Each structure stands twice: as C-alpha cells, then as structure tokens.
Length: 308
Image 1: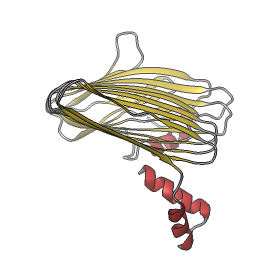
Image 2: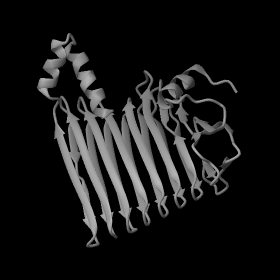
Image 3: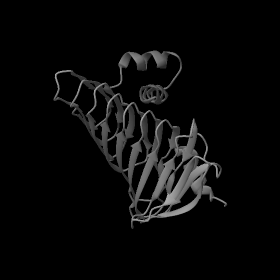
Image 4: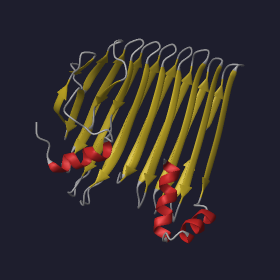
C-alpha cells in the first residue's frame, strides 16, 4: 500500500535500515495497524486478549533474520496504547527494528505508550533497536512512554539499543530485565533533550542465574531548561557480573539527576556502577574552532560524537 509523505519522512528517521513492505513487518499509524507481512520463520498476529497490539512469534529456525515494527503518529490529539509481545524460540537469531515517531502539527497533545514484552528462549540471540523522534510545527506536545520487559532464559543474549533523537517533549521510560543462568544483556541508551522537555528513565535488571551478566551504558545530553532523571538498578541474586555507567553532558540551564543503584544478594555477585555529569570540554571546543568550525558547529560535533 502507498505511504503518505509525512509518514515516510518519519520512517526514514526512526528506521535507519529503511522500512519496506517486505519480509516480516508491521506498521502502526495513528492507533491502527496499517499493513503487515510474515515470513516462513516470523509470524505476526493481532492480539486477541482485548488489548491493541501484536504477538510476534519467531521460530528456532530463524537465523540472522529481521523484523520491522515502527509506529508513526501524524494526527494531533491521538492517544495510542499498544501491547506487543515477542516469543523467541530456543536458538533463534533475530534483529527487531522498532521505533516511534510523532509528527504533531496541531495544538493538541499526541501520545504513544508502548508496552513491549520479550520472552527469549535458551541460547537465542536478539538485537532490539528503537528510535524515538518528535517533529511538526504544532504547539501540542509529543509524548512517548515506553515500557520494556525482557525475560531471558539460559544462555540467551539480548542487545538493547535505544535512542531518543530529538523533539520529544516528555518521556517516561521503564525497563525491567530478568536473566537466568548464563544469560547476558547489553544496554545502550542515548537521549537528548532541549527547551523545556523532560525525560525519566527507570531500569531494573535482575540477575537471577549463575553466570548471568549485564552491561548498561547510558549517555545523555541536556540543553535549554530541560530536565532529565536516570535510575538504573542492577540486582545480583546469584554469582553474576554487572556494570552500570551513566554519563551526561549538561548545557545552559538544564538539570540532570543520575542515580545508579546496585544491590548484591549473593557472595559471588560482582557489580560496578559509575556516573559522571559535566559540561562540554573547553579544550575540545577550542581545538575544533581552530580547525575552522564555528562554536555552534563544534558543539554539534562534540555532542554527536558523545552520543554515538
């Protein structure tokens, strides 16, 4: 089916691989499933429990396959709540490309709340990438509140790469992870706020199995009068390894609170946390300006390098 110009522009931002109506995919727009496709190893079904959303079934035969599930809101005043569940069988290998973009040109708030739950089988390897983005010349807010639940069975590996690019006026992000024996999670969170935007990110990682591990890296840039709050927590209930790192650049009149927390409930739980908040390094600015960049250009280069 044909996709309108504004929706395509948003898709181009939130899906770097390029959304196509091929293979396994599901495009949701303004609270409705617009189009979807299956493959031999990936099946997407509409929920039957009364909730809006989809159930995605990925068989053990899936090897290095990809599924795209973007959400786009282009109408002002939309409030969209969706529940998506992913069932990944033992030994599967898959990349899930998600993301949500809100283009609000009106005076009413537009909001998308997505609850994603991942049930990952033994030895499976899953990469989940999502980008959040706001645009449009309207005065209505662009609100995104993602909830992510991840349940990893033995020796499963999950890579979570989440980024908020720009234009999101308010976000409240909640992530919960549970790991059994030998399971591993790698989280990279990148977030930018400006003007009077607000962002909250709460993350609980429960390492329940022997040999489980977690690496959590959060990087953010706060500009204008924006406010950010981060609270990642690692809970070691067995012999495990975890590392939490929170780094933020603060600019202008912004405020940032970073509260990494570690709880060890087992003698062999090894957990490390670190946090840093600071301004842009003046030496870096001066070096780039001596190369011919303006102050604004130098700042952009530093911020992009820091987030990426």
